[in-house]
Image (tube, rainbow, N blue to C red; front, side, top):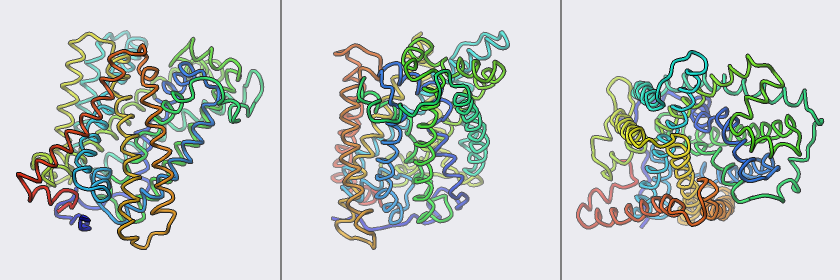
Length: 480
């Protein structure tokens, strides 16, 4: 049976509608962390996959995600809910599937956010040691980051947007200067070869798509702020399209500039030799050491911006599920003054603090374990949610077209479902490469297994609610 359409009343929402397209784009693009991708993601992609055509893959994925946005935006015009994926899948595929998706989303966004603390702590501690001589354990810096994010997450959403806007502007300017410097001082001349199809014919293409897809994580988060934006019917779709275009074009340009800066034939070898230090090495060669040092500082702020953006996303999932009786009701509370989902925010902060503390006591490398394991797990879960959401769009509008054209309600989501499903399968098949683990390693099935376990647990819990708490079950996805 179709779930009744409900737009959340302001009394039960996350506060006054304070934000518009620019602010949401700040949240979305900040989550993808441009400088983090340039310094960490791109060199790793070249080094691990051996694919020179990484720039082309960004263009291909940007087109695929723009197609996905057609159906996603159509759903945002009909459904306003801070749960986004959870709400859309509930309305399209049913309550049980919706709760399963909600549990996958909670694991995905939490692991993505918490995993970033590993890289943030290590990078910041390393910078402090090299520049000031202050030698702090990575986990000390990470826990300090948890505290600062907690304070900002507790405050009004428009304050968070202003902070992210400043940090994002600094990131973009830094990467743009780097890109232009590579083109202006190319050792082998400017070549368009990495943008040609032949450049993507060698190497581990499946793994390369996975790495590139991880760079887009967070683009879909615009709908999480549908109850806090001024005009959700237009704002969400516009913000998502803008975010996909900005991320896709900017990363493709940066990846291309990096190949030009090293020389197309040398990019794989340099990436394998320098790793994440490639960007700073190239910056030192083509711009100067002061700029390279400044870029290292901005990498820290880039990571912080991503942490804050994902924190806000997780808090709103907790809020939405608490409001509808899937999770404990206190999670649905909003702050009297700031209008923020402060209980959900505090819950996410507590989880992050506990996990960082556990990894600190374990003595494991924060980048190779906490960051690598958790962020790849989060990315895998979000890819699955994207494919399921596309299927939900088709099912939802099959019952009632609601004035949407055939492209938005059928063709685009069907194409996106097939394409994203293929990316998800490729991710599973290449998960050993993503983790840097041996084929057959327990990690290659244990970590992805958490995603499937969360989905099954969510479905079982929904069926339990239907039998024991029918009123709560009926409220799932209605925002009432």
